[in-house]
Length: 307
Ligand code: 3PG
Image 1: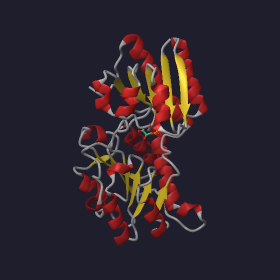
Image 2: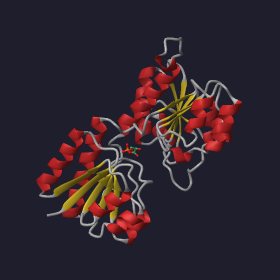
Image 3: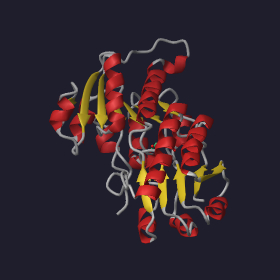
């Protein structure tokens, strides 16, 4: 009987685990659940004899991949796979996949939750501002960016986007103005919603030079990855401009400094919450389980992210 391990330090909603189990039961597979584990060693031990793994932001290091000697496929239930050592997977002949789009709406909704919380002054009873009529810049127009645009239209925001990998005509068709450069986007928009992946090219790519272009009362909304921010540059700007704010679902390493020095100019979630809804967990979890079954039974490699 094939074994599938769900290794999630931040567990899926119970309904998602039930959904995953149903898919695996139907295929005649056994599900092994490892939630809230305290060390990679705990994961390593239990991974030793599994055929497949489903993870979230859990760090699938070379060490874990090597310890899983029977592993054939690992699926990151979510979009970003910067937490998976793809080289280690490829070296071992393990297929690595993600489940693009499955949790995008949840992430987009959180971006607006953070914006509203910020412009309404954390609902503290004082007078805030509105999103209507403000300029929203979507930095990377992928699955999350599309949901952000859809919600922003309801709020009556003016929409701009920058994405060198997407055809401008496709962006324009959605009533969004495509801009030619990151610089233009940051210069134009009151809010920037960040959706770039974290990789060697993008790490620390958002820093002082770009952020200082933002108009007065500008705010960066980061539901992507903390690694894409150059925190020295961010801190420099926060110190220089008392009108600039940083809203992030992935609190920066300099969280303590920002919290102590700049009240009212930040929103940080308790832990990464973007995809933390029952719906997103069900969508991504079931997609992951289905992809595993399709790969192990039919060799289907749709959504493979390693070579
Ligand atoms: C993603 O890349 O899909 C999101 O960042 C979600 O991450 P999570 O599954 O750890 O919540």
